[in-house]
Image 1 (cartoon, rainbow, N blue to C red):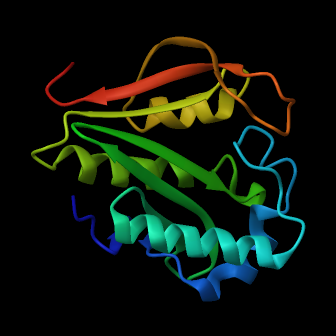
Image 2 (tube, rainbow, N blue to C red; image 1 turned 30 degrees about the horizontal axis):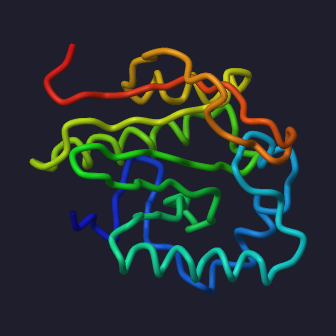
Amino acid sequence: MRPPGLLETDRLRLRRPLLEDAAAIFTAYAQDPEVTRYLTWRPHRRLGATRDFLRRCAEARKEGAAFPWAVTLRPDGRLIGMVEIRPAGHRVELGYVLARPYWGHGLMTEAARAVADWTLAQPEVHRLWAVCDVENLASARVLEKAGMTREGVLRGWIVHPNLGPTPRDCACFARVKGAR
């Protein structure tokens, strides 16, 4: 799989994240406990943690393990979040994060749909899937609006460290090539 370095929508430009994005990411969302509440990582307490994250992103892309994009606004290039795919054979997992001031405007739905459409257009991909905490109704709505179908609940699926050490239930969503 060789995802493009750039995807564009009406309002967004999704591009490869750069080490130079660290300050923008840290300020926009990485240190925000409300944004990271349902994520698998704790808020960054220092800019160095964000730089380390970006180094891991570059390495994952190089190895083909994950393909992240920085989500930026088209008019001014402001970085507002990230979206990522993680391929595993014919299945690809989707994940994302969006800075709080941009919640509720359909921006992550727009980004997720663009990535989903590109991913499912690849001949080797037959399933795009994502999970979100059962209490994260906003994320569930993003996935539905991006064309994914709720398949069920995965009990004790993932630890969200900002909510505690116990694995939590997650709703599973997917888009499957050729399915209706």
